[in-house]
Length: 323
Image (tube, rainbow, N blue to C red):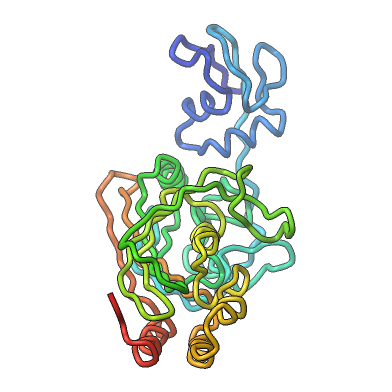
C-alpha cells in the first residue's frame, strides 16, 4: 500500500513539495517535485500540484519514484581529486572541461569522469547531472564539491540555498576600480537579444557578488570575488555590467571590445595578454562548507593553473603593479 499521511498543524499552510520533502528527508525536494509531476501524489483524492498549500487534516497519498538510471557513459578521463570520502568528492576542475552532458554532448565531461571513478551517483537534478549540486563554466577552472549519496546531495543543496556555502574566485578583469572592495547587487537573467547569454536585467533573478582588489596594473586588476548567490555566468555578467569584463571573456566583452577601449599605445601589449589567456581569467579558488553528513567544517584552496599565473607574470612585465 502506498505511503500516506495526514497534514499536521505544523505543516498546514506550507507547499505540498516542501511538506513531502519534510516527510522524506532522505530524498531531495527536487525528487518530491518529480513524484508530484508524475501524478504519484494525491491530496484528499485529487492530483497534487507542487505549489499547492496544504490544510490541517488533509490526507496525502504518494508513491516514491526512483531516479531514472544515468544515461551518461562512464569515461576514463583525468580527474584532480582534492578530497573524497563515502559521501562527497571535492575536485579541481580543469579549464575547458564541461561539467555535465547537455543536448548532443554526451562525453568528455566531468560527470563522465566521476561515473568512471565512483560508479552510481545520486541524480535528483536529472540523469545527466548525477552528483552535481553547483557548476562551473566550461572555461572556469577550480574547486567544486560533488555529492556521492542522496543525503549528501540534499545537505549540500540546502547549504547553497541558505547561502551557507562560501565560494571565492580569483579573477583578472580589465580596467581600474579605485575602491579596494565593492558589491554588485543586480538581478541576472537571460538576455533579450541573445537567449544563449545572460545579462544584468531588472526582470532577472536576484544576484549579489562581492569583491576585493588584490592587485592593480595600468590596464587590469586581480580580484577576490565571493558569490552570495549562484546565477549562471554571474561573476562574468556582473563584472561586464560594471564596465570591467573578465580578461579573455569573449562572450561578455573581455577580448576584442576591451582592447578597442584602450588607448592605441596600450593595445599591442594588451593584445599580447590574450595570447596568454585564451579563456576567461576566472578560477574557483576557495571553497568552504559544512560536511553534509555530520556537519564538520570543510575548507579547501586550489592554486590557479599555469595560464592564470602566466597572465599575472605578463601583466607584471608589461604593466608594473600599482596601488
